[in-house]
Length: 113
Image (cartoon, rainbow, N blue to C red; front, top):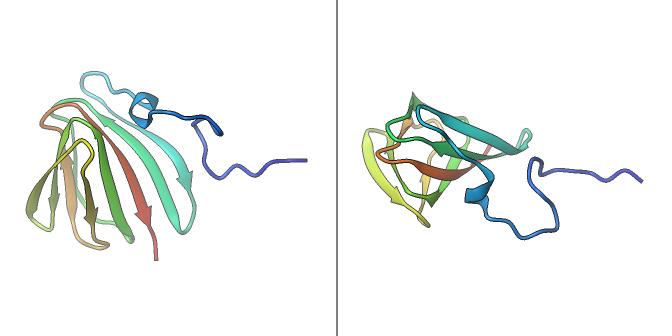
């Protein structure tokens, strides 16, 4: 009997630390997709210091939780400093950017209309 796998690239039925599931080296932004479909996207990111994702927007609401370190998020021109354990929603169709003032890791969940 074949098992449906909806969440990929991490162990199932085992307690894990998401921040240990991804690592960026100097000069890198690394991403690991955990789930992707028409309604939802779940991705882990690791940023090395001074790396960035330039301004862009999304068709869906983007919910980010910082797992380790501190990230700077600019949403609609307003800067937000998000620390480990904190979350931020970046609304659909509003330009946003991400900058790593220091190395950091985050979990991104995008919910599409």
